[in-house]
Length: 111
Length: 114
Image 1 (tube, rainbow over the protein chains, first blue to last red):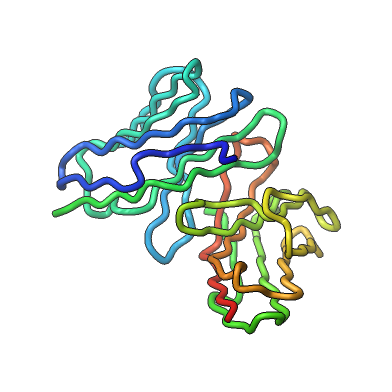
Image 2 (cartoon, rainbow over the protein chains, first blue to last red; image 1 turned 90 degrees about the horizontal axis):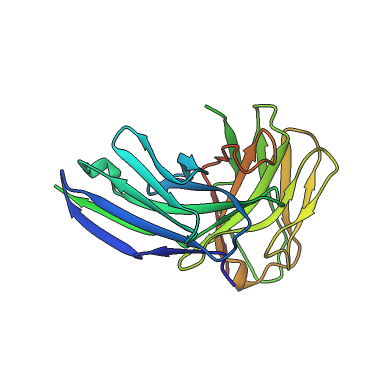
């Protein structure tokens, strides 16, 4: 059973638009949520982590965490073609030294 | 930024063959991980280690062995490769096992078992 569910599987937005990605944990014992981004032919790279309720903003990227619903979202404003990539949500559990990854959302930003 | 180097980048082997994937990190990180990436499954943890000589079992360990020979080097071994092990393999490292620490990934090793 996958601990992390992501939606949608794929998403297309116009350049300059807003992209919104969703992620839910099936395990309440999480400590951190992470967002990683993977461009084609490369390894995943960390975007940001969040562990407190509310918003965390880093440049054009904003993560929103709702602990009660075990849900985190990632919003990318002013999307650029270079944002086109596979985005993974990952959850770190409080009792385990590993991250559990979702199946990813493929984002395409169309010029 | 932390550097993680994997080799080989691409490998084709036959069913029943032996394969060793290598990973080296040069950032003095304690934790190293092996993940496999498959469409629809995301990244799944095979094995991980918190130091030389240590090995921990991940979520999908069947058919895989791993060995951490030094702090820098972590190897994944497939002794009787099967077509189901065709996948993209990633090695990663982190300073500690705390889930607040960033994972740094290598560029990946694509394995095809025919």
